[in-house]
Amino acid sequence: VAGYRGFFYHFLDMETGDRFEQVELSTIDTALLLAGALFCRQYFDGDDLAEAEIRALADSLYRRVDWTWAQPRPPRVS
Image (cartoon, rainbow, N blue to C red):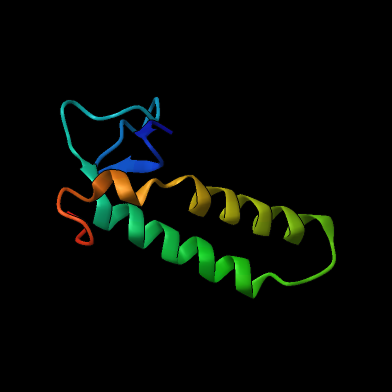
């Protein structure tokens, strides 16, 4: 899926996963997605490989977002 500095675009092309037209990166949509991913990371706490992979993927999504890039006037996020 297309994005920039860990952020996701507001809309994606459903066929390709690329940015739809000229839509903006979305801090709120990224935050909502991460909230769901982090919830799943905590919920799937089993020892099997599938649940370990869910936790690893959620952690990867979370850690790749560069929140400082979205701070035009620290400590605020735009």
